[in-house]
Image (cartoon, rainbow, N blue to C red):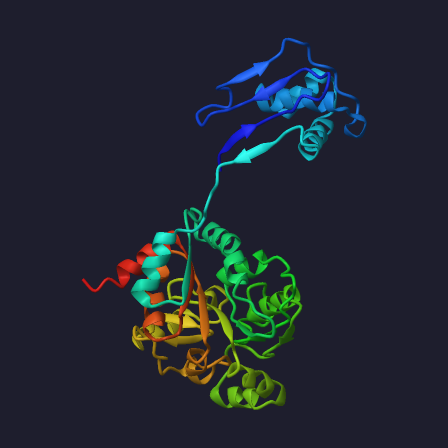
Length: 360
């Protein structure tokens, strides 16, 4: 972000401060009269425009820190901070910022052309670590994803760290679309974590003034028989019927290298090794799939409590939210298997995905 102009405005009778800054320096062009600075009032609530203009000059034009200004004028630092805030609120200080588009339209078009996506959102320069990338993608992509919400929809939601950042970046949508929000998978651990589908679905339903349908079960049952008993329960049958009525699904795509199931100790080292031997390259809603997007025939297939892959494929719009180059192989498999038809991703992840999918 580049601040290209800051203008403390001269009220009638006040010493003039005019700034017309160029791109290279905060002090490239200035005109300041020679009148002495007035002494600011003792508190921001009592301050005149002259007081606020003088503090704004010292801070924005002369480059003095708030503590230095406080010492110079015999005020507390908190008072200086309040004076600067009041100056902005009253329009004495006006700040203009160069236009910035966080989305990479070129990469978005390439992804749509290459993989036949309904739409793609690619966020440029999204953080230096996986954590900061998730936050940046979630923050800047939230508005674009919110545009997909329509009144009366049935929205399915998985869990995961990337989805957490997206869901928590949504502002309350007005008018509220009042959707049915359906949890697509059980909880990863014995306690409900912030990234679990249960908690994220509750938050999304609250922000959209919708109705939350919870899949009150673990992601993995202890065995197939226990899984069958869970899914035959009346409450779960009601939720599972909504799987066939989805208008939109928001999912994360996991890899065996970066798995929330491993981080939450739902899978151990031996489990991951077994999944690799079975050809697993990725995971969606707790279901592990191979390089063609087909579910791997492992013990987890018969223990997982979540939407089935064929049910997910029938959803008209399946939005994967991911970040980083290490998910490229899993994303490519999901795309090839029809598990995803829209994508929210960072620039590095998009470039890695296109390279992974290059037939050469």
